[in-house]
Amino acid sequence: MLEIVKLDRKYCDALASILSADASLHKFLSPNQVMSEIFGDDYYNGCLDWEAKMDGHNFCILYNKVPIGSIAYVHKDAETASVGIWISSEYWNKGLGTQILKIFKKMVKENGYMYLTGTIQKWNPRSKRTCEKCGATFKEDENKWYLTFIL
Image 1 (cartoon, rainbow, N blue to C red):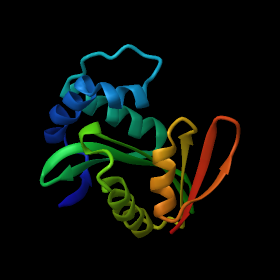
Image 2 (cartoon, helix red, strand yellow):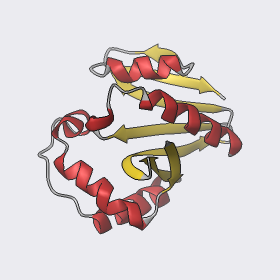
Image 3 (cartoon, rainbow, N blue to C red):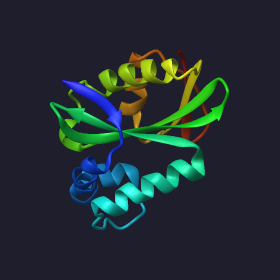
Image 4 (cartoon, rainbow, N blue to C red):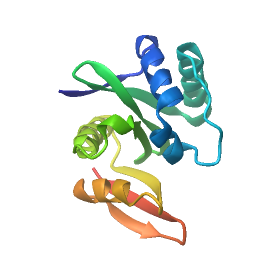
């Protein structure tokens, strides 16, 4: 069963462990950076700093009560939030991304937003397909797709 819960310190060791060990995920998130070990407290404090700086909200994605990734949004304006997501590569290609986005879209709508936007690098067509399944429309430039969900 999938759940999206507010980020809590108790999930951060597991999330940091994923980010420290999942080479496939690292290649997608930070292709030009050296992979390094991250610790739970550093992950948690980094998320709190990001939330304060970006007017954002971080959540943990749980699958059968086990942390498998993170999803977040930032406030853009009164009607619009912007989404970012990552999940452990162990859970890729299982249809979970589509389920996660459907749950998250509902959460964001319940927080008063009418639109959810995001950006996908063109070297990541799987993420684009996931967003298409969830009803996104797209604009694009040479390197990126810019998605919009009407909530």
